[in-house]
Image 1 (tube, one colour):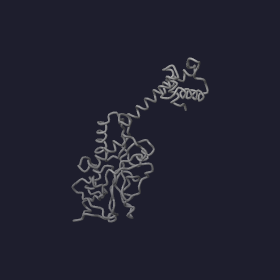
Image 2 (cartoon, one colour):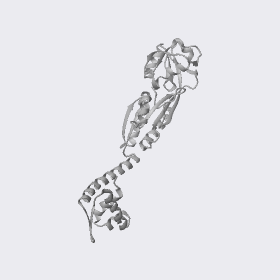
Image 3 (cartoon, one colour):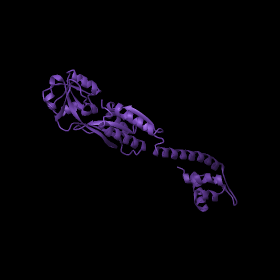
Image 4 (cartoon, one colour):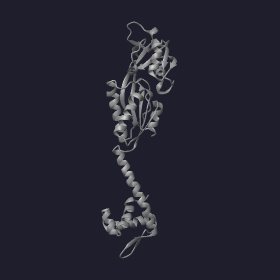
Length: 308
């Protein structure tokens, strides 16, 4: 690869007309400049300069190289400007994904605030569950994903990824009218092994929390109804179709539904994270992450976004 310092000397030689003038622009001695130009000729394997006692001028090969050098330095200047723009959040991009139930209340307002503050940063958004978005972040197809996982279940592969906890929510058991008991405030999941269960749409992956948790308790849940919307699951519970595990943030009061703390197993949580690449130092990613943290923790505490 050509040495850009030597190319710069050759270009400056054309501007000044002398090696001494090029050396002055480069901040070196004429002798050092002459040595660098000779090294450039040796690197190219062809004479670039016609030297005489009183002058120096370009050969045809030198002229062609200088023409290309001009384009090289224009692109280098543009590259430097673009990088500085990215570092100052006046350019660049950020590609975002999030799972459905936080998209409306958390992601869209955060993206709007980000766009308002950093108008020159390009943004894209994709709705995606963690089993899709986390590998996409890891391989560079996404820059940031809002993901979720469940306590007591196997952790996802975080190799090369960094996570920031947005919220840790406990799981509650939503119980329909025919299974409610007077004064009951807590439940052991095993006591509902024979009940009909409601759960998220997929029966595998990150959303298969109901299946995995119940299996860990020693029974296979009989899941007859599925939806990826908590409010629809709550309607089905209220209509006496069965029980469902619901994050506390989504447990809106509803006639006919009783929410019970899960006494056994302990430690059932629904954890929401910002997931980014460990090596990614993008200012845009850092700025959006900060906005999400402010809205995800402070905003939820103030009741500004729902998980439904």
